[in-house]
Image (cartoon, rainbow, N blue to C red; front, side, top):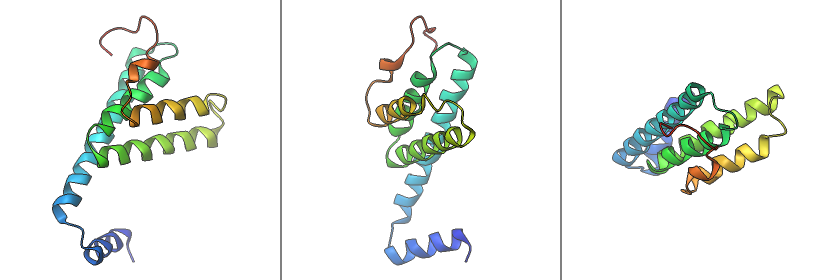
Length: 122
């Protein structure tokens, strides 16, 4: 059975309201866009020690969208952490990046991780 058919079947059985499902998916898409914007800003800024700030900011912005945004932020953050762990990059920094992601998703101020003299544009 295709995954999309299985998901639809589960929603029919569980009786999930289509409006709720649509809202969740909309929030998830907006949250994914927030995460992408934070990543793009990090690449554009090219600022030393700014990774944790942009991770926290992306997760914060996505989580502010609602449950769908928080879900998207968590999935994207965990995928990134898993990929970095798999490739062996930034293994020593792994726990601190995860902490920054969770910090942002919990609604705390991402400026806690803001590096000194980062341009105000970000």
